[in-house]
Length: 133
Image 1 (cartoon, helix red, strand yellow):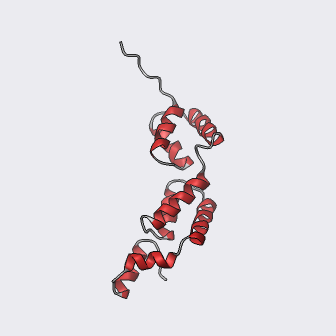
Image 2 (cartoon, one colour; image 1 turned 90 degrees about the vertical axis):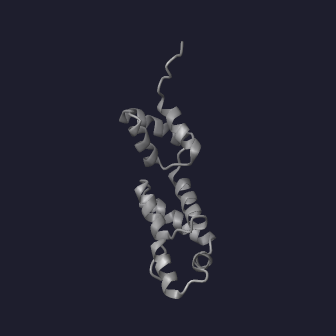
Image 3 (cartoon, helix red, strand yellow; image 1 turned 120 degrees about the horizontal axis):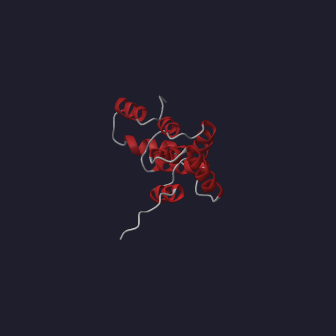
């Protein structure tokens, strides 16, 4: 006879974090979707923050770094995506600033637009969130 698994918000949260790092608000939303009460969710979030499983600064930095270097997204687009994930504006600004100090933005732009005429290159960069420069 199978025993029914008892739901546990910490286990569900850790399962979500196993796949990739997540923002605090993103995790809060996902736990709410799973039907947990607000009080349970807040206790879980506090516990996970205390244990170092949730860190929006680290999350934002890694998200910005990967988005810029691997996915070739621009700072404006990345900022919008992080806002949608519920990361505070000051954390986003700080993460973008740190990554831009480490990464050659001009080199990334050149990689993206290699062999394109100037007009198409400018349009592509704008669509990818690099602004109008």
